[in-house]
Each structure stands twice: as C-alpha cells, then as structure tokens.
Amino acid sequence: MVRSEDAATLERIAAGDLLAAQIIFEADEELIEHIGFHLQQFIEKTMKASLQRHDIDYPKTHDLVILLELFPYEKVTEEEEIFAYILSRFVVESRCSMSSTSPLHSQQLLEKTKKFAEFIETLWDNQ
Image 1 (spheres, rainbow, N blue to C red):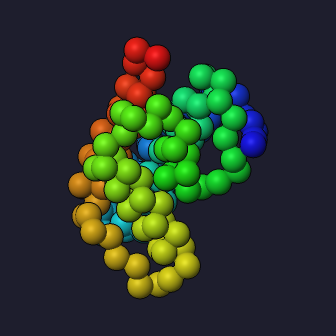
Image 2 (cartoon, helix red, strand yellow):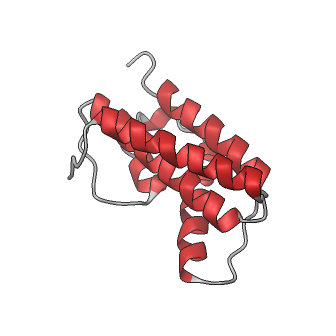
C-alpha cells in the first residue's frame, strides 16, 4: 500500500488535470484520447486524495476499479463501477493503441467524469 502524496497535493494536481481536459476539449473536442487521459488522471487523484483524507492506504495503481473497491462499497452502484471501468480501459487502450474508441463522446465523458468525482465525495456520508 502506498501514500505518495498528501491529500492537498493530490487535489491540486487533480484540479490541473481537469483544467487540462477542459482546455483540450475547448480547443478540439475530437482529441478524445488526450481529454480522456487527463480525466482519468483527475479521477485517480481525486480518489486517492479522498482515501488519504479518510486514512485509507491504497495500492500503487492507475486502475479506478481497484481504487473504487477501497471506498464504502455498499454505496457504489453498477453504473459507477461501469464508468470507472470504462474510463480506466479507455485510457489504457488509447495509450497502447492508435485505434482506441470510446463508448462516449468527449462532452459525455467530461460530464460523467465531473458527476463521478462528486459521487466519490458522497461515499463517505454517514460513515
């Protein structure tokens, strides 16, 4: 298990990843591989910061599904788990292949990622 950065640092870097995704989207929404990469990084760091704030160690991984399993899992719906999987797989495939495709277009990916980040924060409610 790893704790590489403190929560505030992770949150600051995550905000930069979200900003980068938004800037790329505004410049050219067809650059979905780059948008998706920064959105995955945003969620990964957001999740790790949340785990840090709740004193939970996490493995050194980029897999959002593995990280999601460390949260109060009874509150995680199938929809959120599927989105974590889609975002993780899409990014891996886009970095390893020149022909990756996303089941979502850039606008959907951006909107769903923001909602997912908000959802992550609600997982600790009433804990």
